[in-house]
Amino acid sequence: MKFKLLLTPLILALLGTAQAAEPLTLRIGAPDQSAGPLPFVQGPLGLAHIQKSLEKALAADGVEVKWVFFKGAGPAVNEALANQQLDFAWLGDLAAIIGRSSGLETRWLLGARGANMYLAVRPGLTVGSLDDLRGKRVSVYRGTADQLSFARALAAKGLKERDLQIISLDWGAARAALAAGQIDATWSGSGILALGKQGVQFPVSTKQMPPSATTQAGLIGTQAFIDAHPDVTQHLVDVLVANAKWLSEPDHVQPYAKLMAAQSNIPEGLFQQELQGDDLHFRQSPRPDPFLLGNLQDSVDQAKTLGLIRRSFEAASWVEPRFVDHALAEQQLQNFWPQYDRNGKAL
Image 1 (cartoon, rainbow, N blue to C red):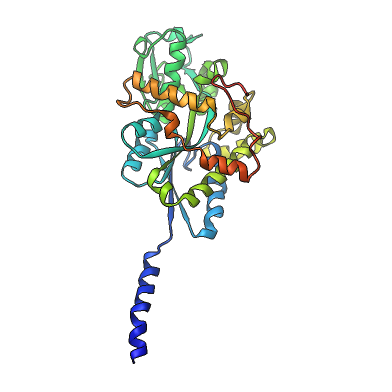
Image 2: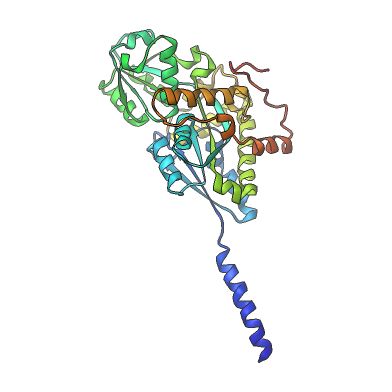
């Protein structure tokens, strides 16, 4: 009887520990860029979502993966981060910057750059350049990387937002408004190219501009999760670096476009059109090189100038490179992507 009494507290303690050790759930958020019923995001994270490569990588550790897609884009993702409902998010630079400036304890872990933007003009309206937009009704999705890209493009022509009638619309609403003739033009990502079959024209794009006019995005993580689970964070970055390598290879453009088209309900040819002629290594490089760091700082400064954030900060102190550096070493990719300078030229 004494023997049983001695064991009872130990057994109870072990049972309590087992009950407390619930499976860890990795919660990842992203804006939903889909034109159909399935959630969708591009790039290495989108590839991981479709192929379930992250779930496979974390299965042995008993880590579950929860995906959350937001129609409200950056503002909705930041709200979820603020409410501690997410651990990681894939965001355009402006949304991530707004969150950081407002007090969200995040770190920028991995980047992607060079996504093109297009000026889409309604049928029947003649626009040959950005100068022709003066006084026109033009939509841009405020609070996203699109807004900074458009501001940079306008500034290159000596224009400001006040020279136009700017309307803030999300991507789906902008497509609908343009097709209905309710706006004259919109500045949007490659999904807008689908309206070409309806007579919409695309006289200007960032393909004709310096790389700094394109949009940057990246993976941000909460400091709390990174500190508590650095090993899981590393697994996540490992998967995304491997996916970035796959996306950097020209032979994979067609299969990537096919995967994205099936998920997004956006024609396959539009994904190929978006990538045609671009330096895939530049676009997919996860490295925090001079181009990425410089553009992030420019975006921080620009957001402060435009009154989009109240508090500026140093982008270099926000970026946490150790996880990408470790992944590059483990996968022997230190020389796969060159360093790119502030102008997007390979060093």
